Length: 235
Image (cartoon, rainbow, N blue to C red; front, side, top):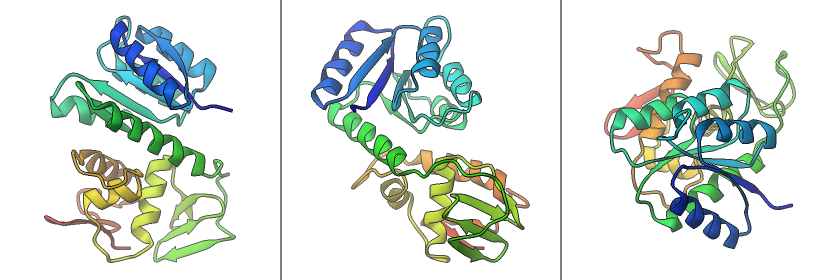
């Protein structure tokens, strides 16, 4: 069965170009030209990925993203924005978007990001039940990774993580003490092969993860910054 991409964009020519190119790659598409319709299609049809414009009539992309996440959906969301302001991009990521791409964009780059996000979700295990860890365990001091249940425990308590946050801590913890650059994390955790470009998505994901795992996010002990180099798992 083909994967379905929901395009939420109010510019007809962009929708036509995206639909055509995604169709050539074997994807089915759904289209919405305003925020409320996009939200409705997202919740009713559960697509495999959403391409979400920021500036929409009726409800902007930020609000659509927030409501999709509040509904408990982990559908990958790539935001489309014509704006260069860093605050817009960071806000989108903070609200739960997986990535963003700035217009005008390369169709090749957009298709690569769509493929990477869908591949990541297809590899993700089913959502686990929150219970005491057992099975395939990795113990790292106060943190335990239960790979069988895809759950991270801190001091025996399960953390409420997104799939991206789980993937990020698992990757860093796979080699404790080793520093990974932001580009390396984009490649291995975001699945963007040979990634070069904006890496602030990593910083936002790390900040959100620290808020859930650290005793004091301002003085992290688990996800540690190596200035000028990247991040490492300290434990």
